[in-house]
Length: 308
Image (cartoon, rainbow, N blue to C red):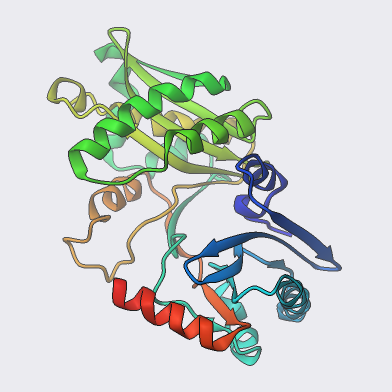
């Protein structure tokens, strides 16, 4: 089965390291990993990018098992997805509700197929990306890969700068330290950074499986003298080519706006950046919820909708 990284054993172990209560079950043709979460006046089982199933019949079995678990735990509702858009009929038939009020995981992503030759992969990138890849070393930029969890500190320094500049709210440092210590030693993730004049000016953390490299987190120095070097572009290109050399199937650049999104969408800038590396847009599907305690659920959903 083609399992998403957020349904993998590696992600399960990371969630355990955060102290979260997790559940994992499988059957013939289906599997899921779910996290028990508690919110204001509710509790839920959350299955990110799952369940994984080979067809709708097997998905139905997975959903039945997940529902039984949810009832045993007395949760308010179940949350799954994004999930294969071809499974919509089963979800409707099983009384699941599309969660249009919440966007925990990106429904749209951008994927680069690595079955092409290396030359074809580079040729499909935008010309500025190709030029950067071929010439970045002439500007004194070097690209490095690390499996050392301690190196996540370089990302944290830069993401704090980004947060200060943009007003974004990243995860706490402890979250990233746990992620690095859980995933980097086992090579379920790789940390990349770009240097110039002995200063780290761009960083990225990728999640790695046998088939897919996911562009999970990134941050770069925004001062004019370093921004013009386009180190993030060089770094990502090297990571894509490295994934090809490791015989992975694809690189998932994770999280873009759909074509219909307005030009002033908050994600417009990095969507344009990701599309410049070639590849194609993919619709991952929607997030769905099943109320197990309907009154509590609809009160929670109404509150979340008003809060937005």
